[in-house]
Image (cartoon, rainbow, N blue to C red; front, side, top):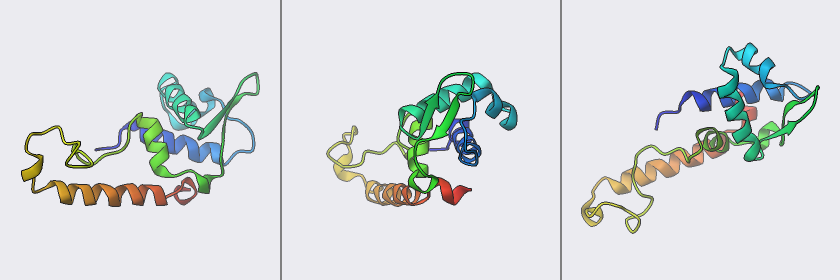
Length: 132
C-alpha cells in the first residue's frame, strides 16, 4: 500500500500541533502546510475519533494531542488517517481467511505474511516523537 496524502498531512499536522502548548485551529494549520482546509479538517476529525487528537471548541479552539508524542505510533496515525489498516498486499492474514480458492497451494502467502508482520512491528515502534 502506498501511503496517501492523508497520512502525509496527518503526520505533518501532528508535528506542528505537538510543538504548541495551545490548540491549533484547522485554518492556521491549512495555511502553514498549504493544504486544503476541508480535506485537513476531515483528517483531523478522524485522528480525534482515534483519540490521537482532542478537539477544543470555541474562539480559541482547535486541536491538541491527546497523548504524549512518544505514545502515538505511526501505525495508529496511518490507520486513522487512511481509515484502514496499512497493508502491503491485498493478501489475507491467514490461509483460513483467504478469499481465493488457491490458498492451500499459494507459495507467496508465507513471505507476504512475514513481510506484513515486520512492517506492522516497524510502524508500531516508530512514534510521533521519532518523526520530530
